Length: 372
Image 1 (cartoon, rainbow, N blue to C red):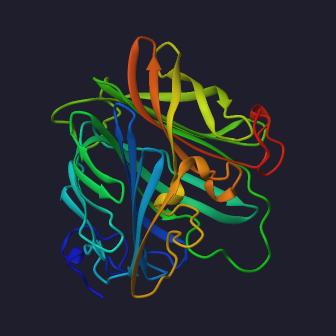
Image 2 (cartoon, one colour):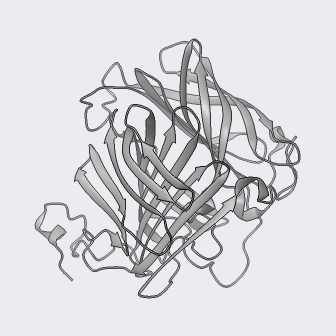
């Protein structure tokens, strides 16, 4: 099962690159990306994944504008060659690794198309490895890097055309790989009710970008956190160098959250941050748009990541965001386009939230009772 990748000096096991190094059915390799309008008018998300032990490759694209979220989903039999990154009319092309890539969706029956190019404006940040267990079972073991950039191009949906301009469209992409729950749920003994409190905030400013992320337990204790400040450049380094004085480790701390009444959706957040070797500060975030991650396959009941849909299949769907059930368990994973303020710095960015189960500081005592 050789592929073109086997001609590169990149092997980590004695097997060909196309053969996964683990037999875990939840092995995965994924791109996630977003784009946000600096004026706050729209937001889009992209997901592209390969699930070698499920023999699935899938892709999703979703745009939120004027209160309506339009989504494209595609799935196919995983190709033998990992360099083949096309699902139906959807193509992901690596133009210059760690510098630029293209996302294109050609004409198709869903009426959703795009021709977009991402370019880095800061070096890629390797985040701390994440490992989670459910009782004695390994649930998540993954590595991820995050990179800030800009987008340009066009998007077409049944709602019309959106022109994406590089000067006003910021974006973040993350690449992660390893093991995490994907595909159809496992069989056998049911697991315990989930408890997840996750906040992740990549923030863009004119001269720098800051990345903050944390998991907390039911009592509000942080058990995993990561944060980095990186400089912005017209010719950024490929990877953030921790020895560079402009690359600063950030330690997320306490948070103060405000929620929309009767929901767990954050409307405003204050995140305390302690930079290594510097004075602490607070990042203030205000939600402008709320994007359902179901639109790019996360927790989607039909088009979830790694779900077998046949040799090839595509679909499109649209919904009004204000008509979603705020306590639907499949819509609790959301992204907020946020306005960000740190001292006198003003910027824009993303606040990702997943809040399931108890979390005492937020006033949550059950699986999905409202916060507050």
